[in-house]
Length: 469
Image (tube, rainbow, N blue to C red; front, side, top):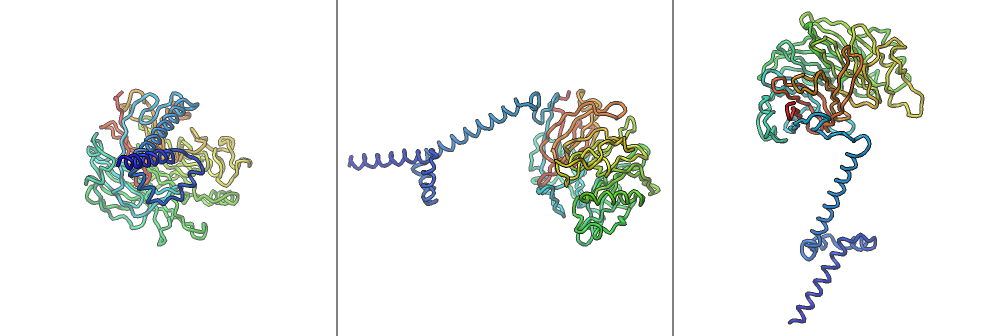
């Protein structure tokens, strides 16, 4: 009996030691040998005889992975370019509170893809005690601000709680929204219509509705058709995002909006077409127009823009600042001056995507030399610039007279300050949020920023001043 016990013990220890050796040693010949062992048998051995060695192996792998990540973090924090830099929600001089809430429960009509990834673009506004979410397909959701700012709120809060109110409207069936805006106690909406193939017509429409969280009854403010037959001019469906369409309510009661190049004179359009022959067509030519929402008339303010995607008027000076997508490189921040030309598609600090890096510059680089307005600042490489907002001085004593510029491609906020005349940027601090930022609003009463984060299913981002300084 003892001999059988000793024999069984020896066999078990032999299998245990050899199993431990097989599990941990990465010898090429042993790896090849293990490939011939049936999967079911390997699983049985791992769950029984080799249970402890397998757990030890998993633990060792976990410890090595932790060491690797800690080493990588240390190298990042101490490498050139990361010294004295903090990780969000900490910034250079301020600790922030950040939370995000998934919009997975929101179902939209169309699927949008940016650089191979599915995104859910939407825009933000605030009205009384509510935040308004306007999605690209024309759907609107209202939610109470107090619901968003609960400190205990989780990422899946909207999925588990009925706090997002879908508001019905009388909008056309197939549209692509470019912006929403609360102005003069009304909700304004800019959009482009789609044809029967769901291709964007690249026209401009502005509708408005009385603010109501039960039903939005929209009326047309102004519509400008695109006279170009895009199916003949540009073969294929114009299914990319609409160009421009960002609005700002002006101090004088009018509305400033960036619009596709569909209302400009024929001479300028001929110059553009001549330029287009030399590089790949981009469909992106824009200008700013000022609309009287009462008389329903407009006039051109500035031209020579590519794709302005953010605009704001400084309430203290009346200065208008716009953000604009460049080509490969050349995202711009511009001071908008009536009657001026900003150079596109003749001058840019960016280059066409088709131009190779070892080829001469295609665009001119000196705006002033050719009679155009220089940008206040140009990002090279591009950041995928989006909206710009002025920081309320009550948000923080450290962020006085500051502005925040959001970005899509770089998934960051850029804190900056301009000089008194808005001719130059004094400094820029990059604050990496980690998601594509389509829009940003400020809740003055709560001293809180709300971000439209469009990655995957979409998220609402919430930023406040953690220490209140």
